Amino acid sequence: MALPLKILFVSSEVTPFAKTGGLADVSSALPKAIKEAGHDIRVFMPKYAAIKDRKFILRDVIRLKDMVITHGSHPIKLNIKSSFIPDSKVQVYFLDYPPYFERDELYVDPKTGTDFVDNPERFALFSRTAIEMLKRLHWQPDVIHCNDWQTSLIPVFLKVLYVDDEFYQSTRTLLSVHNLAYQGIFPAKKLAVTGLSEKLYNSGGALEFFGRLNFLKAGLEYADLINTVSPTYAKEIQTTNEFGYGLEGILKRRTEQLFGILNGVDYSEWSPDVDPWIPLKYDFKTVEDKIENKKHLLKLCNLPFDPAVPCIGAISRLADQKGFDLIFKAIDKILKLKVQFIILGKGEEKYHQFFSALQKKYPTQVSVHLKFDNQLAHLIEAGCDLFLMPSKYEPCGLNQLYSLKYGTIPIVRATGGLMDTVTDFSANPKHGTGFVFQKYNAREMLTAIRNAIATFQNRTIWREMIIRAMKQIFSWEVSSHEYIKLYLRLSKKK
Image (cartoon, rainbow, N blue to C red; front, top):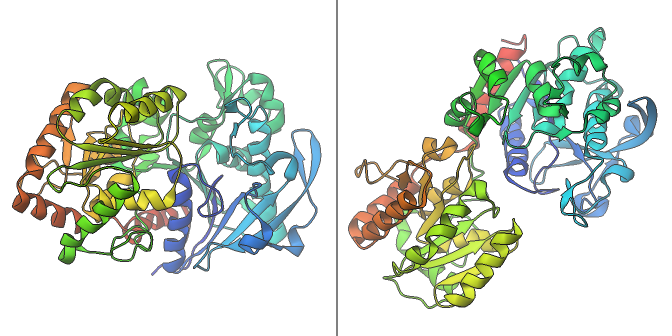
């Protein structure tokens, strides 16, 4: 084995401390896997209002008390506290600056429904502090692993503001893009809060994006290596504006430094043989016990139980990107197929209204839960027969991976990580683990659902597919080794 690496993993959200999406799960599970592989990895994140000192056993770090950070053109005094990711030895540092982070929401102002207007100030400070605290700790990482736009100024700061600082001469950066649609785009006047020169903005500089400031673009220009969360998505984002969101040119130019690594699954949390949230545990050898979870789920959702009626689940942010415009167009035809449909998630108001009305229209077939509920999410994975993910694009996706493990057969569109992880039964019956449709339209999605329901009626073939799906392995142990390869490529510890 190569010499142990030192990695600072910087993320704006980490489970169980704060979460809005899959980034938080990755930012917890991946560092744990890296630590278990023998490397010194530490995590840095903001201390939001929900992160209570007593609940998570946060402690002061003497060296990091009353730090003064240059923010834009003026100093800010802040503190950094420390704890550990539960059930691990991964240390987490928390940026404690209440004026910016003592808020119930992470990015969006609940009063307006739009992003906080000071997000550039908040995450510029976050990125600058990540670098500055290293000196106070006397800890020099080989790699700073950045995640999404909230941390994308770190590579820029290192190569511009700290280019002559000996302390950082051996530190390299990896930038992981979890969803290219979110880039951290702000008015040009916000450049001042970064402390960076106008030269980086003027004349199409790294920070400029169609007359606005773009944090992610700058990170893509300056990071030593870039990765995204599936091999197919890494290719897609280099092709057209549909996937690249205006950054496809940069990504194509940096294709030699761009990699795709599938997210893994934390099977200590998402596996039906150990899941504490479901009424009856099972594995591929006792797959018949899955039906008991279905009975419990349907009772909880006030839906009648009939073993001959397939139940389709969906757990998602309710947005067009996730394919809900297709569901909107096809839902009446779907429900005519004698299926049940359970949906869990929050998102755009138009879908809140639509699904609420749908439940009233089809009370014995549809159950809608407009919230985030971890326990119900586990029960949907264990109790449903099918799981629908018709995404317009999907960098990796986690729920299709959970569904495979739970023997809940996924119906997905051929994009990003969905294409990399689900084998289409219709095209490959001997190896199929789900149903995949190609074109992004309601007609093709409906065909895939019809094929799935028809296959469901053949209990022998269906059982074989469930067992095949449950045997698929997408563990963080596998994915973490791919990240370690990138870390070693960046460092001198070959």
